[in-house]
Amino acid sequence: MVPVGIQWQTGIVIEIVAAGEKLQEIVLETADGDRCRAYHDLTAFAPLRPGDEVLANTTAVALGLGTGGAHFVLAPLAQVHSGGGPLPPGHIMKLRYTALQRAVLAVEEADSGMQEKLAGRSTLERMPVLIGELHSMLPAAVAWLRCRNDGKQPVRIAYIMTDGAALPIALSRHVDRLNALGWLAGTITYGHAYGGDLEAVNKYTALLAAKHVLEADIAIVTMGPGIVGTGTPYGYTGIETGELVNAVSALGGIPVFMPRVSFGDARERHRGLSHHSITALKTAALASAAVPLPLLSSPEQADILRDQAASSRIADKHRIVWREAPSPDRMEAALCAYGAAITSMGRGWRDDPPFFAAVCTAADEALAGLAATRPAHGAEG
Image (cartoon, rainbow, N blue to C red; front, side, top):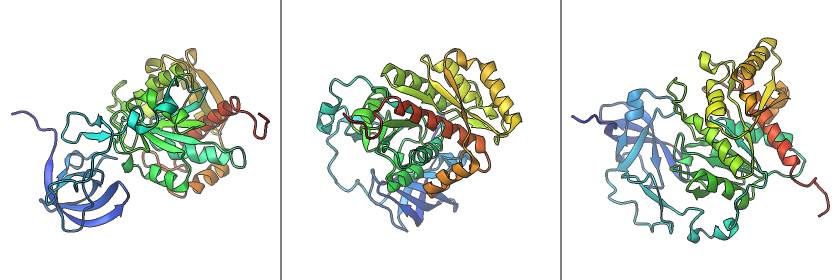
């Protein structure tokens, strides 16, 4: 018998927990009597109501996964179509050659109206691009950029979501929050990720669209929620950060790597500078990037980080920038302005300050790169 990689169950919608423009979060009672959080994609079917019967993918819960540990509704059993709405004008398919393939209007297509803005554009014109492996780096970086830039010339920030983790951007509460705050110039999803303000075929056109369509001053690129890791040197989706360094460099941008630093993670491979960051920088990144590292207040932690930076020899290829770590008060003020919890692997900034300090120092480096490439505020011409 061929192994089946998907577990299906029917269930009844018990409660609508939250509803956005593109996603419903519900409580679903499956046929075996268990109740669990589930998500329903509103870009595929009409909204659900309590009492509706659905077919759901229950694989992640059966496997006891973390971020992805919820059910996902495939289809309401009482709805035979998606509502009869017209298909979008685009002809690019995402989730290709699956039952869930969907048409999107990609920024590269003529019907998008964006081709003129991208015509002949092959460079990022020295735009700083913050590259991170964890989705939680996004809100921390944006909050710190706004805090540090308060009262200065406005900075337009674009977010690019890769397809290394969750594919629908609607699953990100952080993106919802940042959009509600008006802190993003726009979002772009590329590859098989979908649901951004702009859709792109690949990382190169996504980066160019951030610069020339969204007119971003700084772009931030991370995957969505739910990084994949196996505990092996190369078996993790975060290795894409090295490939992103190459893409940004090839397009004439400034790649600024947000290192994954932690002293709250019990796993030795993630203590200090994570092996994920080291491997991506040493192996996958062929071009050079700025790698900011925080000067930590704890002598023991500072020594460990310095030893790792030296022993890994990442400085043979990349520019290590040691920056003063933000004070706890300043970091708290920046993150509190966001107005919602930001956690990484379940830990907030008080639980693991070095993680957030590393993100903040990288954001400072991006601001420094921006200041070096744009006219001073108020300058003529």
